[in-house]
Image 1 (cartoon, one colour):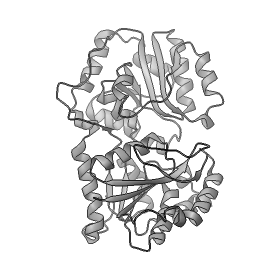
Image 2: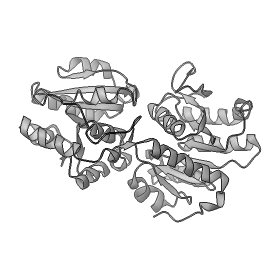
Image 3: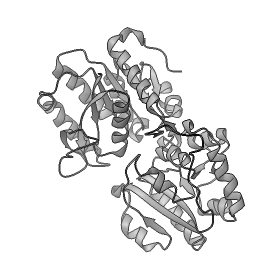
Image 4: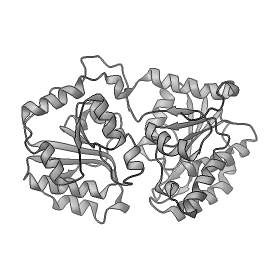
Amino acid sequence: MLHVLYLVHDVSDPAVRRRIIMLKAGGAQVTLAGFRRSASPIAEVEGLHPIDLGATRDGRFAQRLAAVTKAAVSIGSKLGSMPRPDLIIARNLEMLALARRARSAFQATVPIVYECLDIHRLMLRDDFLGKVMRGAERYLARDVKLLVTSSPAFIANYFKPFGQIAAPVELLENKYFEPAAVSPNDRTAAEPVTPPWRIGWFGALRCRRSLELLAEFSRRLEGRFEIILRGRPALSEFPDFHGFVESEPWLSFGGPYRNPEDMAMIYREVHFSWAIDFFEQGLNSEWLLPNRLYEGCRFGAVPISMGHTETGRFLDQHGIGVLLPQATPEALEAALGELDEHRFGKLRARVLARNPRTWSHDRGDCRALVEKLRGLTVAPGSYAAEALA
Protein backbone atom coordinates (compact mmCIF):
# COMPACT_ATOMS: atom_id res chain seq x y z
CA MET A 1 0.00 0.00 0.00
CA LEU A 2 1.36 3.40 -0.98
CA HIS A 3 2.16 5.45 2.12
CA VAL A 4 1.73 9.20 1.56
CA LEU A 5 2.86 11.93 3.94
CA TYR A 6 0.50 14.84 3.27
CA LEU A 7 1.89 18.22 4.41
CA VAL A 8 -0.77 20.93 4.48
CA HIS A 9 -1.09 24.59 5.39
CA ASP A 10 -4.35 24.13 7.33
CA VAL A 11 -5.40 20.67 8.52
CA SER A 12 -9.00 21.83 9.06
CA ASP A 13 -9.42 23.08 5.48
CA PRO A 14 -12.33 21.12 3.94
CA ALA A 15 -10.33 20.78 0.71
CA VAL A 16 -7.65 18.91 2.66
CA ARG A 17 -10.25 16.43 3.89
CA ARG A 18 -11.51 15.95 0.31
CA ARG A 19 -8.03 15.11 -0.92
CA ILE A 20 -7.51 12.65 1.95
CA ILE A 21 -10.81 10.97 1.03
CA MET A 22 -9.62 10.65 -2.57
CA LEU A 23 -6.24 9.21 -1.60
CA LYS A 24 -7.76 6.68 0.77
CA ALA A 25 -10.46 5.72 -1.76
CA GLY A 26 -7.65 5.11 -4.25
CA GLY A 27 -5.94 2.68 -1.89
CA ALA A 28 -3.28 4.85 -0.24
CA GLN A 29 -2.33 5.04 3.41
CA VAL A 30 -2.09 8.68 4.51
CA THR A 31 -0.22 10.40 7.31
CA LEU A 32 -1.36 13.99 7.77
CA ALA A 33 0.85 16.77 9.14
CA GLY A 34 0.42 20.51 9.00
CA PHE A 35 -0.46 23.83 10.50
CA ARG A 36 -3.80 24.82 11.95
CA ARG A 37 -5.81 28.05 12.15
CA SER A 38 -7.33 27.16 15.53
CA ALA A 39 -6.06 27.83 19.04
CA SER A 40 -5.89 24.12 19.90
CA PRO A 41 -4.60 21.16 17.85
CA ILE A 42 -7.09 19.36 15.60
CA ALA A 43 -7.78 15.92 17.04
CA GLU A 44 -9.03 14.09 13.94
CA VAL A 45 -9.50 14.53 10.20
CA GLU A 46 -11.17 11.69 8.27
CA GLY A 47 -9.96 9.12 10.78
CA LEU A 48 -6.41 10.51 10.85
CA HIS A 49 -4.71 12.10 13.84
CA PRO A 50 -2.75 15.02 12.39
CA ILE A 51 0.83 15.75 13.38
CA ASP A 52 0.59 19.32 14.62
CA LEU A 53 3.20 21.77 13.27
CA GLY A 54 1.79 24.81 15.05
CA ALA A 55 -0.72 27.60 14.51
CA THR A 56 -0.83 30.14 11.67
CA ARG A 57 -3.16 33.02 10.91
CA ASP A 58 -5.10 33.65 7.74
CA GLY A 59 -3.73 36.59 5.76
CA ARG A 60 -0.71 37.09 8.05
CA PHE A 61 2.23 36.42 5.73
CA ALA A 62 4.99 37.39 8.18
CA GLN A 63 3.50 35.26 10.94
CA ARG A 64 3.19 32.28 8.60
CA LEU A 65 6.80 32.68 7.47
CA ALA A 66 7.93 32.65 11.10
CA ALA A 67 5.83 29.54 11.78
CA VAL A 68 7.36 27.74 8.79
CA THR A 69 10.87 28.67 9.97
CA LYS A 70 10.12 27.33 13.42
CA ALA A 71 8.57 24.14 12.03
CA ALA A 72 11.59 23.56 9.79
CA VAL A 73 13.73 23.22 12.90
CA SER A 74 11.41 20.80 14.69
CA ILE A 75 9.89 18.78 11.85
CA GLY A 76 12.49 16.01 12.19
CA SER A 77 11.48 15.30 15.77
CA LYS A 78 7.78 15.77 14.95
CA LEU A 79 7.95 13.05 12.30
CA GLY A 80 10.49 10.91 14.09
CA SER A 81 8.04 8.24 15.23
CA MET A 82 6.41 7.61 11.87
CA PRO A 83 7.68 5.07 9.32
CA ARG A 84 9.33 6.43 6.21
CA PRO A 85 6.67 7.35 3.64
CA ASP A 86 6.84 6.32 0.00
CA LEU A 87 5.88 9.81 -1.17
CA ILE A 88 5.43 13.34 0.20
CA ILE A 89 2.70 15.65 -1.10
CA ALA A 90 3.27 19.31 -0.25
CA ARG A 91 0.15 21.46 -0.47
CA ASN A 92 1.22 25.07 -1.18
CA LEU A 93 4.64 26.69 -1.31
CA GLU A 94 5.23 26.93 2.43
CA MET A 95 4.75 23.17 2.76
CA LEU A 96 7.11 22.52 -0.14
CA ALA A 97 9.89 24.04 1.96
CA LEU A 98 8.99 21.73 4.84
CA ALA A 99 8.74 18.72 2.54
CA ARG A 100 12.41 19.03 1.72
CA ARG A 101 13.28 19.25 5.42
CA ALA A 102 11.10 16.22 6.13
CA ARG A 103 12.81 14.24 3.38
CA SER A 104 16.19 15.02 4.94
CA ALA A 105 14.90 13.79 8.31
CA PHE A 106 14.00 10.42 6.78
CA GLN A 107 17.53 10.14 5.37
CA ALA A 108 16.18 8.66 2.18
CA THR A 109 15.23 9.71 -1.33
CA VAL A 110 11.49 10.23 -0.99
CA PRO A 111 9.74 11.69 -4.09
CA ILE A 112 7.96 15.02 -3.55
CA VAL A 113 4.75 16.10 -5.28
CA TYR A 114 3.89 19.80 -5.28
CA GLU A 115 0.15 20.50 -5.03
CA CYS A 116 -0.62 24.11 -5.96
CA LEU A 117 -4.30 24.98 -6.29
CA ASP A 118 -4.06 28.77 -5.95
CA ILE A 119 -1.54 31.35 -7.17
CA HIS A 120 -1.04 33.85 -4.35
CA ARG A 121 -0.88 37.50 -5.38
CA LEU A 122 2.63 37.81 -3.91
CA MET A 123 3.87 35.37 -6.54
CA LEU A 124 2.67 37.67 -9.33
CA ARG A 125 4.17 40.96 -8.24
CA ASP A 126 6.66 42.64 -10.57
CA ASP A 127 8.79 44.03 -7.75
CA PHE A 128 11.71 42.58 -5.82
CA LEU A 129 9.45 40.63 -3.44
CA GLY A 130 7.63 38.93 -6.30
CA LYS A 131 10.90 37.95 -7.95
CA VAL A 132 12.21 36.57 -4.66
CA MET A 133 9.04 34.52 -4.13
CA ARG A 134 9.13 33.06 -7.64
CA GLY A 135 12.82 32.33 -7.27
CA ALA A 136 12.17 30.54 -3.99
CA GLU A 137 9.47 28.43 -5.62
CA ARG A 138 11.73 27.48 -8.54
CA TYR A 139 14.50 26.53 -6.13
CA LEU A 140 12.30 24.47 -3.81
CA ALA A 141 10.57 22.74 -6.73
CA ARG A 142 13.74 22.01 -8.68
CA ASP A 143 13.45 18.24 -8.24
CA VAL A 144 9.77 17.63 -7.53
CA LYS A 145 8.41 14.66 -9.48
CA LEU A 146 4.95 16.04 -10.25
CA LEU A 147 3.02 19.30 -10.13
CA VAL A 148 -0.68 18.92 -9.28
CA THR A 149 -2.90 21.89 -10.11
CA SER A 150 -6.60 22.41 -10.73
CA SER A 151 -7.03 24.80 -13.66
CA PRO A 152 -5.42 24.99 -17.12
CA ALA A 153 -5.30 28.78 -16.68
CA PHE A 154 -2.79 28.38 -13.83
CA ILE A 155 -0.48 26.57 -16.25
CA ALA A 156 -1.04 28.98 -19.15
CA ASN A 157 -0.82 32.20 -17.13
CA TYR A 158 1.71 31.37 -14.44
CA PHE A 159 3.66 28.12 -14.45
CA LYS A 160 4.47 28.14 -18.18
CA PRO A 161 5.31 31.85 -18.81
CA PHE A 162 7.37 32.19 -15.63
CA GLY A 163 9.08 28.82 -16.10
CA GLN A 164 8.42 27.82 -12.51
CA ILE A 165 8.27 24.02 -12.62
CA ALA A 166 10.09 21.57 -14.89
CA ALA A 167 8.15 18.53 -13.65
CA PRO A 168 5.20 16.94 -15.47
CA VAL A 169 1.79 18.40 -14.66
CA GLU A 170 -1.29 16.57 -13.43
CA LEU A 171 -4.47 18.60 -13.97
CA LEU A 172 -6.75 17.51 -11.12
CA GLU A 173 -9.93 19.55 -11.28
CA ASN A 174 -11.80 20.52 -8.12
CA LYS A 175 -14.57 18.04 -8.84
CA TYR A 176 -17.03 16.69 -6.34
CA PHE A 177 -16.12 13.23 -5.04
CA GLU A 178 -18.89 10.76 -5.82
CA PRO A 179 -19.01 8.22 -2.96
CA ALA A 180 -21.06 5.74 -5.01
CA ALA A 181 -21.72 5.00 -8.66
CA VAL A 182 -24.11 7.45 -10.34
CA SER A 183 -27.10 6.27 -12.30
CA PRO A 184 -27.78 8.35 -15.44
CA ASN A 185 -31.24 9.01 -14.02
CA ASP A 186 -29.92 10.12 -10.64
CA ARG A 187 -29.21 13.74 -11.49
CA THR A 188 -31.19 15.67 -8.90
CA ALA A 189 -34.41 15.35 -6.96
CA ALA A 190 -37.45 17.20 -8.26
CA GLU A 191 -37.61 20.60 -6.63
CA PRO A 192 -40.16 23.43 -6.88
CA VAL A 193 -39.12 26.05 -9.44
CA THR A 194 -41.08 29.02 -8.20
CA PRO A 195 -39.96 32.25 -6.53
CA PRO A 196 -38.44 33.28 -4.29
CA TRP A 197 -35.38 32.30 -6.29
CA ARG A 198 -32.42 31.32 -4.15
CA ILE A 199 -28.75 31.92 -4.97
CA GLY A 200 -26.32 29.78 -2.97
CA TRP A 201 -22.81 31.01 -2.23
CA PHE A 202 -21.04 28.07 -0.59
CA GLY A 203 -17.47 27.20 0.39
CA ALA A 204 -14.63 29.52 1.34
CA LEU A 205 -16.38 32.88 1.72
CA ARG A 206 -13.59 35.42 1.30
CA CYS A 207 -14.86 37.94 -1.27
CA ARG A 208 -16.25 41.12 0.27
CA ARG A 209 -17.26 42.47 -3.13
CA SER A 210 -19.43 39.42 -3.83
CA LEU A 211 -21.15 39.79 -0.47
CA GLU A 212 -21.97 43.45 -1.03
CA LEU A 213 -23.06 42.88 -4.65
CA LEU A 214 -25.43 40.06 -3.70
CA ALA A 215 -26.84 42.05 -0.79
CA GLU A 216 -27.62 45.05 -3.00
CA PHE A 217 -29.10 42.84 -5.71
CA SER A 218 -31.44 41.15 -3.23
CA ARG A 219 -32.59 44.53 -1.95
CA ARG A 220 -33.24 45.81 -5.48
CA LEU A 221 -35.42 42.77 -6.21
CA GLU A 222 -37.22 43.18 -2.86
CA GLY A 223 -37.20 39.53 -1.88
CA ARG A 224 -37.77 37.85 -5.24
CA PHE A 225 -34.22 36.56 -4.75
CA GLU A 226 -32.79 35.21 -1.50
CA ILE A 227 -29.07 34.71 -0.89
CA ILE A 228 -28.05 31.62 1.09
CA LEU A 229 -24.48 31.55 2.44
CA ARG A 230 -22.79 28.42 3.80
CA GLY A 231 -19.22 27.47 4.56
CA ARG A 232 -16.29 29.16 6.26
CA PRO A 233 -16.17 32.97 6.07
CA ALA A 234 -12.69 34.49 6.09
CA LEU A 235 -13.38 36.95 8.87
CA SER A 236 -10.11 38.75 8.15
CA GLU A 237 -11.68 39.94 4.87
CA PHE A 238 -14.95 41.27 6.35
CA PRO A 239 -15.24 44.06 8.96
CA ASP A 240 -18.30 42.35 10.49
CA PHE A 241 -19.50 39.40 8.45
CA HIS A 242 -22.17 38.15 10.85
CA GLY A 243 -23.48 41.63 11.62
CA PHE A 244 -23.67 42.47 7.92
CA VAL A 245 -25.62 39.31 7.10
CA GLU A 246 -28.02 39.81 10.00
CA SER A 247 -28.76 43.36 8.87
CA GLU A 248 -29.72 42.27 5.35
CA PRO A 249 -33.35 41.14 4.97
CA TRP A 250 -32.73 38.58 2.23
CA LEU A 251 -29.34 37.17 3.23
CA SER A 252 -28.84 34.22 5.57
CA PHE A 253 -25.82 32.25 6.76
CA GLY A 254 -26.31 28.52 7.32
CA GLY A 255 -22.88 27.79 8.81
CA PRO A 256 -20.36 25.13 7.76
CA TYR A 257 -21.19 21.85 6.07
CA ARG A 258 -19.52 18.51 5.35
CA ASN A 259 -18.32 17.57 1.90
CA PRO A 260 -19.42 15.23 0.35
CA GLU A 261 -22.02 14.27 2.97
CA ASP A 262 -24.12 17.46 2.89
CA MET A 263 -23.70 18.53 -0.72
CA ALA A 264 -26.94 17.15 -2.13
CA MET A 265 -28.94 18.74 0.66
CA ILE A 266 -27.47 22.23 0.50
CA TYR A 267 -27.45 22.58 -3.28
CA ARG A 268 -30.95 21.22 -3.72
CA GLU A 269 -32.17 24.04 -1.50
CA VAL A 270 -31.06 26.66 -4.05
CA HIS A 271 -31.69 27.42 -7.70
CA PHE A 272 -28.41 29.11 -8.59
CA SER A 273 -24.78 28.74 -7.53
CA TRP A 274 -22.56 31.83 -7.18
CA ALA A 275 -19.31 30.86 -8.97
CA ILE A 276 -17.68 34.32 -8.88
CA ASP A 277 -14.71 35.43 -6.79
CA PHE A 278 -13.09 38.88 -6.81
CA PHE A 279 -10.71 38.12 -3.95
CA GLU A 280 -7.67 38.42 -6.23
CA GLN A 281 -9.31 40.11 -9.18
CA GLY A 282 -7.39 39.99 -12.44
CA LEU A 283 -5.15 37.22 -11.13
CA ASN A 284 -5.99 33.99 -9.29
CA SER A 285 -9.72 34.77 -9.16
CA GLU A 286 -9.94 34.90 -12.94
CA TRP A 287 -7.92 31.72 -13.47
CA LEU A 288 -9.43 29.26 -11.01
CA LEU A 289 -12.14 26.66 -11.53
CA PRO A 290 -13.68 26.61 -8.04
CA ASN A 291 -15.12 23.68 -6.11
CA ARG A 292 -18.55 25.30 -6.10
CA LEU A 293 -18.65 25.21 -9.91
CA TYR A 294 -18.54 21.41 -9.97
CA GLU A 295 -20.54 20.82 -6.80
CA GLY A 296 -23.40 23.09 -7.79
CA CYS A 297 -23.71 21.68 -11.31
CA ARG A 298 -23.59 18.12 -9.98
CA PHE A 299 -26.83 18.78 -8.10
CA GLY A 300 -28.60 20.91 -10.68
CA ALA A 301 -27.86 24.43 -9.41
CA VAL A 302 -27.41 26.85 -12.31
CA PRO A 303 -23.98 28.53 -12.06
CA ILE A 304 -23.51 32.30 -12.25
CA SER A 305 -20.11 33.53 -13.39
CA MET A 306 -18.27 36.34 -15.15
CA GLY A 307 -17.94 35.81 -18.88
CA HIS A 308 -14.25 36.78 -19.15
CA THR A 309 -12.94 34.36 -16.48
CA GLU A 310 -11.72 30.78 -16.84
CA THR A 311 -14.95 29.66 -15.15
CA GLY A 312 -16.96 31.69 -17.64
CA ARG A 313 -15.09 30.20 -20.58
CA PHE A 314 -15.64 26.71 -19.17
CA LEU A 315 -19.39 27.31 -18.85
CA ASP A 316 -19.59 28.84 -22.31
CA GLN A 317 -17.93 25.75 -23.79
CA HIS A 318 -20.57 23.59 -22.14
CA GLY A 319 -23.43 25.92 -23.10
CA ILE A 320 -24.69 26.35 -19.54
CA GLY A 321 -24.98 28.94 -16.80
CA VAL A 322 -25.60 32.67 -16.52
CA LEU A 323 -22.62 34.79 -17.62
CA LEU A 324 -22.40 38.40 -16.52
CA PRO A 325 -20.66 41.08 -18.65
CA GLN A 326 -20.03 43.27 -15.58
CA ALA A 327 -19.80 42.73 -11.84
CA THR A 328 -22.67 44.98 -10.82
CA PRO A 329 -26.11 44.56 -9.26
CA GLU A 330 -27.52 46.13 -12.42
CA ALA A 331 -25.93 43.48 -14.63
CA LEU A 332 -27.22 40.72 -12.36
CA GLU A 333 -30.69 42.27 -12.42
CA ALA A 334 -30.60 42.51 -16.22
CA ALA A 335 -29.65 38.81 -16.41
CA LEU A 336 -32.13 37.46 -13.86
CA GLY A 337 -34.62 40.17 -12.97
CA GLU A 338 -37.32 38.90 -15.36
CA LEU A 339 -36.73 35.24 -14.52
CA ASP A 340 -39.77 32.98 -14.69
CA GLU A 341 -40.37 29.28 -14.20
CA HIS A 342 -40.10 28.45 -17.89
CA ARG A 343 -36.71 30.12 -18.37
CA PHE A 344 -35.31 28.63 -15.18
CA GLY A 345 -36.46 25.17 -16.24
CA LYS A 346 -34.49 25.54 -19.48
CA LEU A 347 -31.39 26.76 -17.62
CA ARG A 348 -31.50 23.86 -15.20
CA ALA A 349 -32.22 21.30 -17.94
CA ARG A 350 -29.00 22.30 -19.72
CA VAL A 351 -27.00 21.67 -16.54
CA LEU A 352 -28.66 18.33 -15.89
CA ALA A 353 -28.09 17.23 -19.48
CA ARG A 354 -24.34 17.09 -18.94
CA ASN A 355 -22.70 13.79 -18.08
CA PRO A 356 -22.27 13.62 -14.26
CA ARG A 357 -18.60 12.70 -14.83
CA THR A 358 -18.11 16.31 -15.95
CA TRP A 359 -18.60 17.33 -12.35
CA SER A 360 -17.51 14.33 -10.28
CA HIS A 361 -14.56 12.13 -9.45
CA ASP A 362 -15.39 8.50 -8.75
CA ARG A 363 -13.39 5.70 -7.14
CA GLY A 364 -11.86 4.83 -10.48
CA ASP A 365 -10.39 8.34 -10.69
CA CYS A 366 -9.05 7.95 -7.14
CA ARG A 367 -7.36 4.66 -8.02
CA ALA A 368 -5.86 6.22 -11.15
CA LEU A 369 -4.46 9.10 -9.10
CA VAL A 370 -2.88 6.77 -6.55
CA GLU A 371 -1.43 4.60 -9.32
CA LYS A 372 0.18 7.67 -10.90
CA LEU A 373 1.66 8.58 -7.53
CA ARG A 374 2.85 5.00 -7.05
CA GLY A 375 4.61 5.20 -10.40
CA LEU A 376 6.72 8.06 -9.07
CA THR A 377 8.10 5.77 -6.39
CA VAL A 378 8.57 2.43 -8.15
CA ALA A 379 9.80 3.75 -11.49
CA PRO A 380 10.97 7.35 -11.02
CA GLY A 381 12.53 7.43 -14.46
CA SER A 382 9.20 6.67 -16.13
CA TYR A 383 7.98 10.23 -15.66
CA ALA A 384 10.72 12.17 -17.41
CA ALA A 385 10.75 15.91 -17.03
CA GLU A 386 8.95 17.56 -19.89
CA ALA A 387 8.18 21.09 -20.95
CA LEU A 388 4.86 22.49 -19.82
CA ALA A 389 2.34 22.45 -22.60
